[in-house]
Length: 369
Image 1: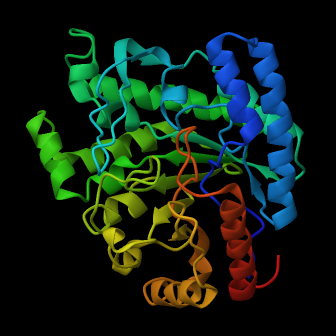
Image 2 (image 1 turned 120 degrees about the vertical axis):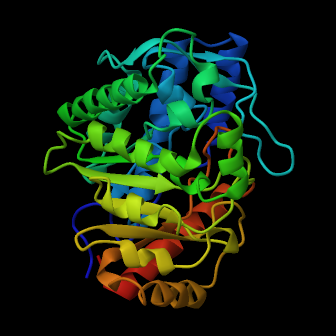
């Protein structure tokens, strides 16, 4: 049976490959040859075309492809009160030696003023589609996981419990602001939970003074605080992956270490989970999923343009259904196609063929939408 509310049987994480006109406009803007208004005009035009393309292939959760962002996370987090971007090692080096020379610094007590630019970004999508406008933002743990205490101004948060509480409160205000703007489908991209399944990442946390055995519960508490006042008609999903920058990755390991906390300690409605490679382990952790929640199986990779075989995807859906009712499952790519503006190493037509195939498979498995 198809679903009339999020997450949808055929869904996607959020980001899409930036188009040539958009890339050219951003380059001109950074070079100082066009104004911010000129850039916005190009963004608006390209996003409307993107919305129409998503509608045409049969998607029901519609995003702006994160076309106004350079990064999936920095662009949101650096607009929180007392958070700034700095040129520094992000601490997240991808396999193959690829790194990002940018990080976030907490300069005071974190808050949400209500003037965040992404509120208007969401409104634009909602105004330009009759389907469900979806908003994606990084999860609250992302302000801590990548830098930890070393990226906080000394003396601001001597008590880390205060930090976790402040971030949770700031997110609660952000959730409320998006809801007031008409958002009924909000996604938290909180990849730290998947990273906590990797022994190397757990050692990284230990080496900087954090206890990896406690972080999943701490992060779940931040999410719970952020969603404590969630309206009943607001669908919240969470996306987990193991890194996605120019088709590279960071972490490996199955979900077993975090599955119980993930599924049972956070008031979210669904989970977008990476399962496109052996690095994600098996489907056994799905046994922890309670009734009433859904998992969107990320079985189609966004990292390459090679199109999967439909029969192989259906077989894997059947494998997952051995551990949870198939009615609690949906289908999507394992991650976005462009977590950063550079995008993954595939072509736009390959991206759309994958999304079209996901819609086709969902219709064949759960019935036509």
